[in-house]
Each structure stands twice: as C-alpha cells, then as structure tokens.
Image (cartoon, rainbow, N blue to C red; front, side, top):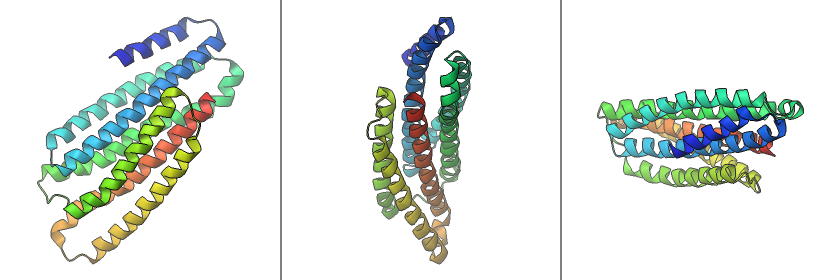
Length: 233
C-alpha cells in the first residue's frame, strides 16, 4: 500500500508540473519503482507456483491465480499513467526513448502471461491428484530455481538503484542459464520418448512445461533489464 501511494504521489507531481525536464526526472523514478516492483512480484509468484506444485498445495496455487489477476489490472492502470506522463516530457527525449519505454511495458505483460502458462497446468495437475514430481527431478531443477532467483534479485536491485553497471554480465548469465535449460529440455523430451512408465507421463509433461517457461522467464527478464537500462541511461 505504501509503495502504491508513493507511485501515485510521483504521478500527481508529474501531472501538476509544467517543466518537461522535471517530469522526465520524475518519470524515470516512477519507471524504476514500477519495474522493480514487477520483477520482485514475478519472482515471488514464480516461487509460489513451484512450491505449490512440489508440495501439492492447491490453495497456494489458487492464491497465485488471484494475485496474477490483480497484478494484470494494476499494470493496466500503471500503463495508462506512464503513457500520459510520456506525453509531458521533452519531445526529443520522448522520440528517442519511446521504443525502450514500450519494450519495458511489454515485458511486464509477458511476465504475467509466462506465469499463467506455468500455473495453469500445475494447478490442473494438483487438482486432479496425479503423481507428484519424483525426487530426482526436484533435485535436478532446484539448482536452476536458485540461479533464476539470484539473477532476478540482481536485476531488481539494478532497477531499484537505477545503477546498471555490470548489467551486461547479468544478460550473459541469463543466456548461459537459458542454454542449460534448453539442454535439460531436450534431455527430458528424450526421457519421455523412451520411458516405459506411463504413470509419470502427466507430471513430466508439467515439468517439461516448467522448464520451457523458465527459459522464457529469463528471456523476459533480459528484455526488461535492457529496455529499462536504455530508457533511463
């Protein structure tokens, strides 16, 4: 609530200012706050989905679904405010940074869609009381979850501080993890193809989806970080 009030305060200042340069400085703060909030929210919900799936906690998955629906509405309001504010900054800056602004906005939407694609099959699986994910697969993915957490926390810190020194290192790390997830995905497809244990088919399909969408999550994180860095630079 405090964060929302602070954003509204900045927006009110932008709407009352007659100085385009001042509006631009306020908008940079507004965007940094918003992108930090989205990045942290997405990571939190990602972890809740994994926890709900692995612990077969339908209530937790249901809660995530409600949170995502609320966040979608919040992002619509945020988008309208920032669009209005972009019209009040210096024209040359608006033209120069417009593409990066829209790429950042699009990243926020894509984050939510990605989480929904992970959530829906996980929720259906738990609701139908299918077999849980075997321990070897839990261990296998845990390392990836930890690395995704670390990268997204680094990204959130850069966004919050508006300090992007070393951001290219984060982009490279994300590409490396994506490649490793791609190799895991191919290996998993091979396992599914040759497996004679049909009882695991459903959960391994859910797991395969998780791996694929975790790749996509990292791609979106890269787009968000790069777009915000270019916008605020």
